[in-house]
Image 1: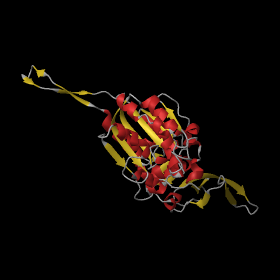
Image 2: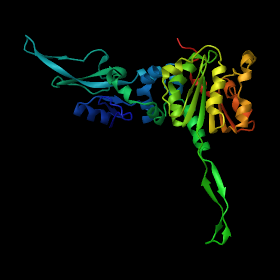
Image 3: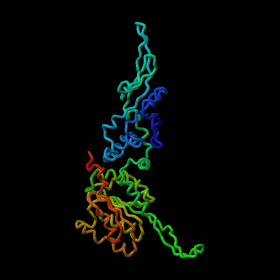
Image 4: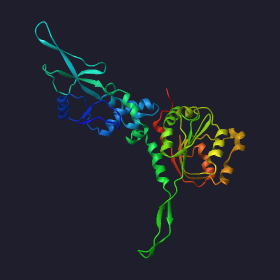
Length: 355
C-alpha cells in the first residue's frame, strides 16, 4: 500500500491498495483508498489519474490512443472514503445512524465484502475519481514533468533523442602515446552549435495540430536550445533568450503562407550562422511556391550561401509524408547533402479538427 503521488503535485491523501489485506489496513486506519485494477501497473494507474488534466490542457490530442486507456476503464476507478456517521436515538429506544456522504460523487457503500456493523462510527462510500482529487493539483504539473512521466506523445521524445544524438560532434586528434610507444589518437568533444526550429501554423495545417504545437513549442525549443521561427498568416522570430508568449505565437495561426517576413527573418537572423539541427514542422506549402513570385527578389538563399550559412542535420516533421516541409526547403537549398530524419507519424495522435 502506498500513497498516490504524481511528481510534486499536491494530491489529496489517497492510498493505492492492491488486495483485500491492504483494503483491511486502509479501513482500520480510516484513510481513503483506490483499488488498483487487476493487471494494471503503477504507470498505467498514474496515466489514468492524469487523464482529465491532459484532456483539459491538450484537447486536440487523442488521449485514449496515446495512453492506451479507454474512457470506460478510467470511469471504473473510484475512491472509497470514510464517512462519519451521526447516531440518533429514536423514539422506540433504538439507535439509528445517518451518514454524511459529503456531497456529489458518492455511490453508496463499498461492495468488496467488508461489512460495517451497527457499532461502527464510520461508513465507507464510493466517490468518483475526479471529484475526489479535484483540480488544484494540476497547476503543479509542468510539461517537463509530463515528459518525465512519459504521458506525452512520443514524437516529443523523438525530437529530444535525435537532437541529443546529434549534439555531440566528435573530433579525432592525432598523437603519440609515450607509455605504449605507438601512435594513438583520441576523440574529443566538438563544438555544440545552437539549433533552429521552424513551426508552420498556416491555414492548411489542421487546427488540432496548430493548437497543440502552439502550446508545446516553447518547451520544445527551450529543451532543444533552439531559436524559433513561427510562420503562418505572419512570421515571427524568437531568439534562444527571447520570451515566447503563446498569445503572440497564436497570432500567426491561420491564413495563407506568408513569405516576405519569413525571408527577412532568414536574412536578418539565420544568414551566416552555423546551426547544429534544424527541426521543421509543416506541410507542402512553401514560400517558394509560384503564388509568391512577387517575393522571389527578396529570397536570401544566395546571400546565405555566400555568407557561409551552415546546417548539420535536418529533422523533417511533415503532416502527411516522409518529406521536407515547405518551410524547411531553404535548408536543402543551402546544404543539398544534409542528413535528414523524417517523421510523419507525429500527427496521428492529434485531432484534425477542433469542435
